[in-house]
Figure 1 (tube, one colour):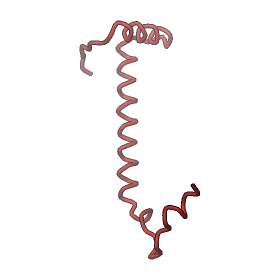
Figure 2 (cartoon, one colour):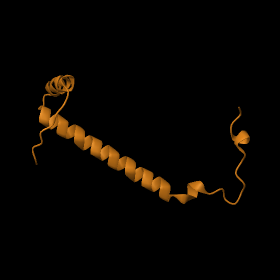
Figure 3 (tube, helix red, strand yellow):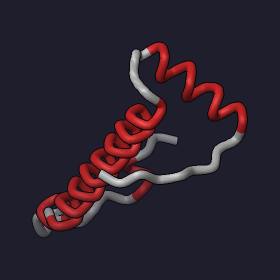
Length: 75
């Protein structure tokens, strides 16, 4: 594990100190956990997006013409 120095606004530091105390943990651990969650969320989103783009079956009309816009949306 590595140590990192960060710069944050005073209000942010106050919030993270209170939040860490509320969770009975250190600021360092809380920030580390938040960054890990962000990384995992972004990785999961990127994987889902790649899977969706790779699934070409959702783009196929099965040889039928696509409906006109007016047929899809009543308005």
